[in-house]
Image 1 (cartoon, rainbow, N blue to C red):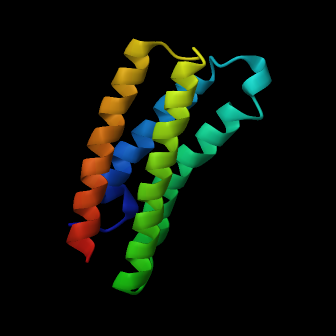
Image 2: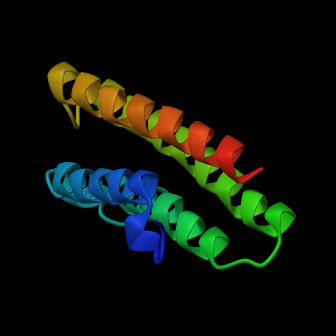
Length: 117
């Protein structure tokens, strides 16, 4: 039974994704501190944050609005990580591992949205 947002499996996975993004961006060049690194962190934080906000909304329409925003933020992170790979801030292996993690989150988030509709 889901009593708090911490009981939502997709929230747990997205929280893990945020932690991974923080580890990865900590190794970015210093000049990216207030640019790509910051944007990646903010976009990744938006995913679980919107799940949490949607969880406490009163109507299905309101809840799903936030879940859809979370899904959009996930896509934003996917692009930004591709850019980081192309700029050689992360290697291909790390990128592929992140893509796998994001694909899993995407499937879980889509299933969560459907289950809440």
